[in-house]
Image 1: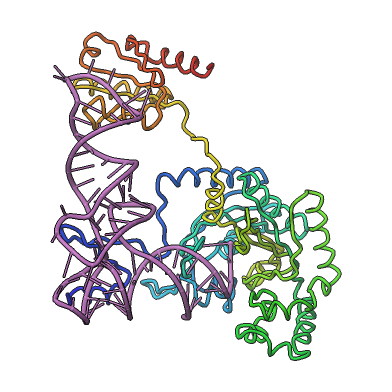
Image 2: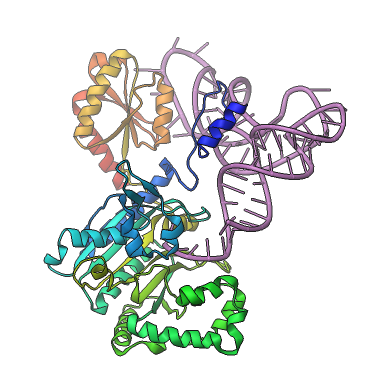
Amino acid sequence: MPRRKNIKMQKPKIKEVKEKNASILFSRLKGMKDILFDEYKYWDLVIKKATELARAYGFRRIETPVLENTKLYERSTGKGSDIVTKEMYTFIDKNGEKISLRPEATPSLVRAYIEHGMFNLPQPVKMFWLGPIFRHDKPQAGRYRQATQFDLEIFGEEAPVADVLLILLAYNFFCELQVNVQIQINSIGCEECRKEYLVKLLEFYKERGRRSKLCGDCKKRIVKNPLRLLDCKEEKCLEAREEAPQIVDYLCDSCREHFIKVLEYLDELDINYNLNPYLVRGLDYYNRTVFEIWAIEEEGGAQGKLALGGGGRYDGLVKYMGGRPTPACGFAVGIERTITKIREKNIPLKSEEGDLIFLAQLGEQARRKAFAIFEELRRAGFKVRQAFTKDSLKVQLEEANRIGAKFSLILGQKEVMDGTILFRDMDSGIQEIVNQKRIKEDIEKKLNLNKGK
RNA sequence: GUGGCUAUAGUACAACGGUUAGUACAUCGGGUUGUGGUCCCGAUGACCUGGGUUCGACUCCCAGUAGCCACCCCA
């Protein structure tokens, strides 16, 4: 027993599982998830939709390494952000370099834009990205330590259309997957107007002792990151917030104009949005337009403002990261959360597979022959399935039934002898004997007949 | 980091302070030797770990661990 204690202390993540023969198995790490067979149909659907839409809007795919230098995130995501201070998987590489598993996509994409001289490409550069991100957060509903994001970025376009294009794409993504969402949108202005606003905001909180009524966190925020005061969900803070000045009233002329344009487009496109003066985002690099995509609760679900995606404009980041001054904006969608929503709605998914044909065999000789037939049919483009590891016909037909095969081809000793094969209709159970040479033509004919029904 | 709830076969759930811990689905095998979907029969398979209370704990208590959920934050 003391032996086990030692193991536990050295490798706290390894969980022992008792088994008959006392072998040790390893279980998943906290917050990590296996995607099993049945769930994959949702992934296929969502990823296909994401890729299709991104291409339709002129975005091109890019992938970046899972590991990056930690400094990349410290500089872009922000040294003060929660992501960098407490959620990153960071460790020292064998060569002494401090590296991190990517907690989000944007920094890598900014890096790639600069590193590959993409400012020499025709602007704007529109890219999409699909892959895992890692955050050492405490897992709960819709939150994993490894999550998958669908991310889009537009570099080199200052016009409000770029913001709108992203929102439109995101919105369509969810609509077409039949997930009801609402866009939450706000503008947090540029450095100039935000500065002015923050002065007003602080004044407001100092008045009438409002400050003393805030929750502990907010008392810290007031010094460190006052914008986030608007974000707090504590009741007393919500109360104080009610009469607080709103940033939209303090935007400078160009920021206001930009924001109004965005909203005008959204109105015209009939996108369901909510102008949310309290929406600010946690990452340091945003300016002007910020938005989140919230799932609309189906029924009675009082709370649950689960963000399915979020993004905004970050005009200063590329320059800050060492590139040329380049306006940019982007957004990310959480794939796992999207899938959760789709599953909640119980929308029946059509299976991607078409008409399946099952090839059964009986006896060693038949099995050899069946291999050849299988290859021939497969190469001809038929969707043939088999269970060559099984001997009994009963088991094979069970399998055929399980996968929903339209027809089964049965090849036994007798059929091998006289060059025929049995053709069984799985719905009716009617069988006929067919010449092996005519299999393909016959399948074709039957499948067509079947469609006619 | 803070708080709440839970812990029984692969999955979903039961039960009990005491002797063979049930049920459903799944899995495997059978219902005469070459025929699936229904039905019938059978088999495999579980009490998170440690301590305490007790004559006796899967059951009660405590701790640990894990999972779920909420806060925080976010996708």
